[in-house]
Length: 69
Image (cartoon, rainbow, N blue to C red; front, side, top):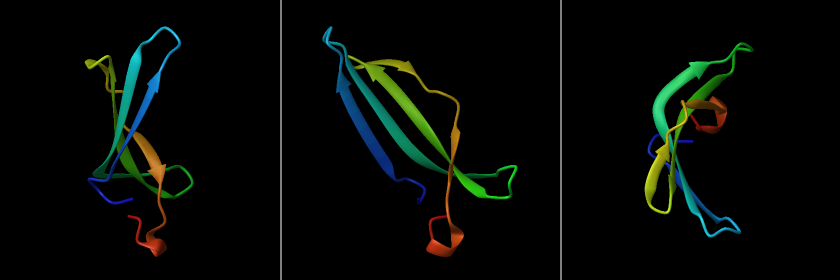
């Protein structure tokens, strides 16, 4: 995953609430306990167009050999 890549997921609940989750890859990395280097991603969640939350950054494992980092 390269910094700046972005995915957007949309869902609608049976009650009609529209939720949008935008996942963006940051330029930050973190070394996990097992020695794997992971890229930090940021989620932004909105419901019916109104900001709901940005959960704390989470790590996504990447493989340097594949040019993912």
